[in-house]
Image (cartoon, rainbow, N blue to C red):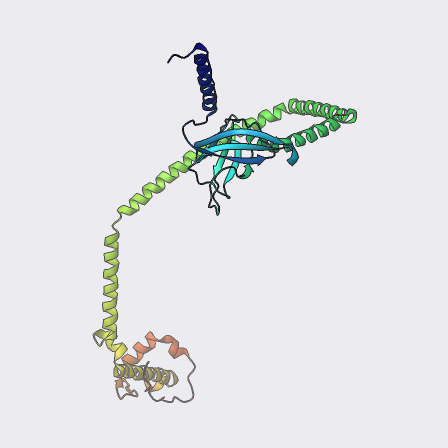
Length: 351
C-alpha cells in the first residue's frame, strides 16, 4: 500500500510537532519518561523566580518550577506551580521555601519534609516560606548606616557655617601664634637646653661607671662566697662538738663527788665544816682586835709567846695571829664591840 505525498507530509508534521513539544519540556528540565506530581505554592513576591528554576531537597534537584500565575483576586499574590518526583512523601506539613540557590542570586525552591498527618497525591497547596536574601540583609544593615551618615554630614555642615568657620580660623590662628611662641622660647633657652643635654650625658656616663662598680662588687661578693664555701666547716663543727662534750664532762664531774669542786658542791658536811671554820676565824679576828693584849705582849727583857684557843678547840699561836692580821688588815681596823658573842653554826642545807 502506497501512501500519498499528502499523508507523508502530514505524518512528518505531526512527528515534528511532538519532537518540538517534548524537546521544549526537556529543555525546561522536565523529565519525559519519569512520573511526577504537581503542587502549587502562593508567595507575596517571588523575587526573580522564573519557570524551570530547580526544586531542591537536601541539596539534590527533585523537580522544577512549572508555571507562575498572578492572583489578582488575592492581593496580587503569585501562585507558583512546581513539578516534583512522584515517589516523594509530600504531605500537609511540607514547607516550600523560596530562597537563593547560589551567591549570584539565582532563585530556587527548597522542600522541607516533616512528619505529616496527611499525604498529598498532587494538586494541593504547600506551606510557603520566603528566606531572606543577601540583598535584603545588606539593605536592612546599610539603610541605618546611611541614615547615620546623613545625620553626621548634616551636623558637620551645621558646624561649618559662617560662624563656625570663623571660630575654626581663629583656633588655627591661635595655634600658629602658640607655635611661634614655643619656637621663640626654644631659641631663647637653646643654651639651657644644651646644658641640660650635656648634664644628661654626664649623668648617663656616671650611671655607666656606677654599673661597672656594681658589677665589680658583685664579682667580689661571688669570690667571697666561694671562699666561704671552701672553709673547713666540718672541722669547725667537730671542734665545737668536742668542746661541748668536754664541757658536759666537766659539768658531770662537778655534779659528782669527784674532785675538790665536786666534793665542795655536793658534800654537805664539808660545807658545814668550812662554814664553822670561817665563823671561828671571824670571831678570833674580832677578839684580837678588841683585846690585843691577850695575845701580844711586849717586854724589854724578854718575849714570851701567848696562845689562844679558838671556838673549835684549836690552839692559835702568836705567829698565826700576826699572819691573820697581815692578811686581813681591814678586819682589825673596825671598832671592837663591847662583847663578842659566838653565833651558833648554820646547819641549814644548801639548795
